[in-house]
Amino acid sequence: PTEGIQSPKIEKRVPNVLTSNEVALLLEQPKNVNLKGIRDKAMLETMYASGLRVSELLSLQLGNINFNEGYLKIKGKGSKERIVPIGEFALDFINRYVTLVRPKYAKNRTKYLFLNRDGAPISRQYFWRQIKKYALKANIDREISPHTLRHSFATHLLENGANLKEVQEMLGHTKIETTQIY
Image 1 (cartoon, helix red, strand yellow):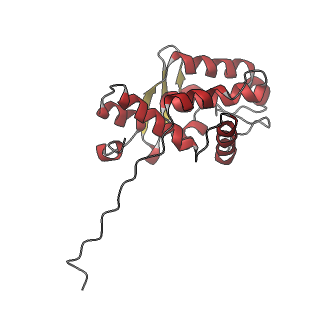
Image 2: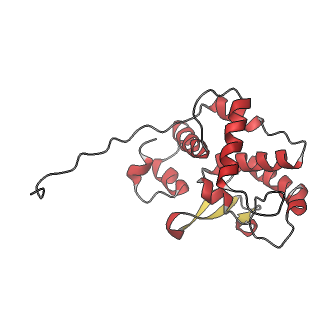
Image 3: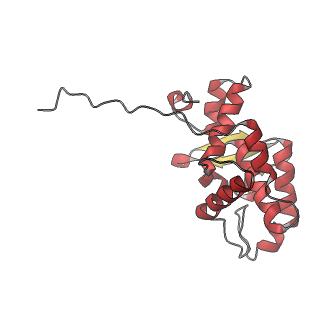
């Protein structure tokens, strides 16, 4: 009996995005004075500079960073690989973390880049809490999540003249319609 009835289209909402000033304030919050601050700063800078999903950031492996050419090799949704450019600024923070912090945290031979002090990969819950904590310190008075940085990355690229197709590739979207929400 329902054969000829079409289901209603789900309205696509505009994603939650930070302004450029809010992003700058958020990225200033982890202080580079202790091991945790250096690591958290590297994680936030990497997330915003590359538009990674939180799972992609936390599963990033040391061997998937090309410091010379400035890109990350990412294994995204559906185990699809993609190359994502990353700027020198974020690479400098990653390098500082790899040089100063990671050797102290890596108690075993793990391939993951971002580790907790026990040598295990950072959890999604930990990263979520850290972003909320840093947003509070930055006086960002609205809902924020790790995905907010990804949305902000895409929106800021497009606002500054980036090509929609290129942004689609960087984000790892299979359909251009997914990227068009920005």
